[in-house]
Amino acid sequence: MNPTYGPEADAYRDKVQAFLAEKLPSDWGGIGRLPNDEVKGFVDSWRTVLYEAGYLAPGWPVEYGGAGLSALEQVILAEEFAKAGVPTGGSNDGFGIQMLGNTLLVWGTEEQKKHYLPRILSGEDIWCQGYSEPNAGSDLGSLALRATLDGDVWVLNGQKIWTSAGHLADHIFTLARTDPDAPKHKGISFLLVDMRQPGIEVRPIRMISGESEFNEVFYTDATCPKHEVVGGVNNGWAVAMSLLGYERGASAATTPIRFQGEVDRLFMLAKERGVDKDPVIRQKLAWCYSKVEVMRYLGMRVLTQFLAGHQPGPDAGITKLYWSEYHQVVSELGVDILGADALVPSGRHPSSAFSADDAGAPNSSSSWVDTFLNARAGTIYAGSSQVQRNIIGEMVLGLPKEPKA
Ligand SMILES: Cc1cc2nc3c(=O)[nH]c(=O)nc-3n(C[C@H](O)[C@H](O)[C@H](O)COP(=O)(O)OP(=O)(O)OC[C@H]3O[C@@H](n4cnc5c(N)ncnc54)[C@H](O)[C@@H]3O)c2cc1C
Image 1 (cartoon, rainbow, N blue to C red):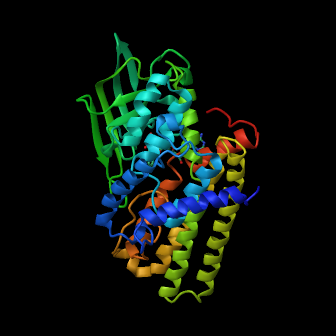
Image 2 (cartoon, rainbow, N blue to C red):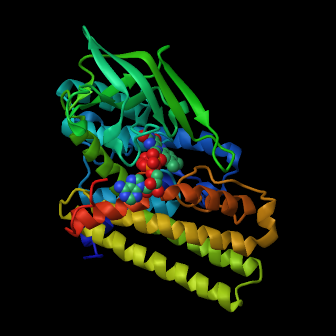
Image 3 (cartoon, protein in one colour):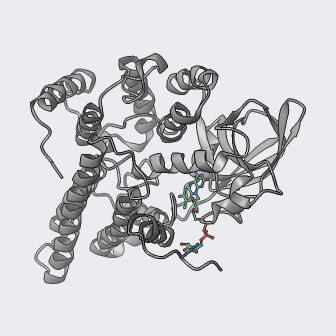
């Protein structure tokens, strides 16, 4: 672990800070300071600023519209954005840029890269992730959505579920069963499907917070051209797994910064509510503080590996397991401190159902209650805690495999 970056990093950090100072208002205090109804407008215009500066996909080669930054520069950029409390892209860019784009760079044909990568960056194509099904979540290899070749098109029938931001997307990368006779992990293909067709229906699912951030997606004789397969027919499992590495590992640099901001806000809340001298609350606050410190060191370890050229693999699950379980405890403490006010939440809401509330957000009761409710899902999405423990045990620690049921 080497938490110091060296003098060349300082020069690049100055450059990023100058960019942020030039593009953000002088009184900027983080996106959480904006009222809920101004967030979307800001994110849309900020995305355009990043697109024009080439910062939307900092690690992609310049020929595909990226900034071609080194690993160190990417880390510094992400850190400075997190500290400033600004997003690194729009609502679906996690799917389009981090997941699909990075995967296409490894597995896509030259034609697919040239067609899709610029369209992802320009916002012409907006993507979501079609992996989970009602009977295939943790056991993703059991997926049943069927794709059958009919001449030059795949015909798709079946259902996906829990499709985050699917209602905002117009394309869905879809895992489909293309050979039902092959062993289950060997008969799957990774297809690029345009959602703007009558065979695709998106139905929102209402969450415990009252919001609808994810959906069911139904395919009824939906189609996609034969050549829209990534990584070869029946080779979708390998493609899907490399994409999950990007989903689970991308945030090592920024996660500790975000959770540090949240725990600082929790200390303020305890003071505001006059419970900061309560010995039981103090003990819990100290526990949260120490957890965030451990998260910081864990982040440095992942970063050191990343800077040495190691791509995220099964070990990315350690960070995800750690922050998602911590987050349920810290957000419950926030609600405990609010006391009866948590029963009638009011004020600004978090702008997303994932992770901590926005940087700079006020200590409103809605902020803590929504974060508490949303944190329930953190130990489920992107691989449940139990599954992460299996992966870490078997693939990182080399323990014996889980017995087959
Ligand atoms: C907020 C949210 C957003 C999501 N977004 C998306 C998305 O955009 N696209 C997408 O495709 N999916 C998405 N998902 C789905 C997510 O990937 C699945 O919910 C997750 O993989 C778990 O699958 P499941 O819900 O079917 O639960 P199951 O797999 O049915 O698991 C039920 C319980 O059994 C446990 N379990 C299962 N197998 C094992 C095992 N082998 N050993 C020990 N315990 C086990 C699990 O840990 C869990 O507690 C999202 C989910 C959530 C909550």
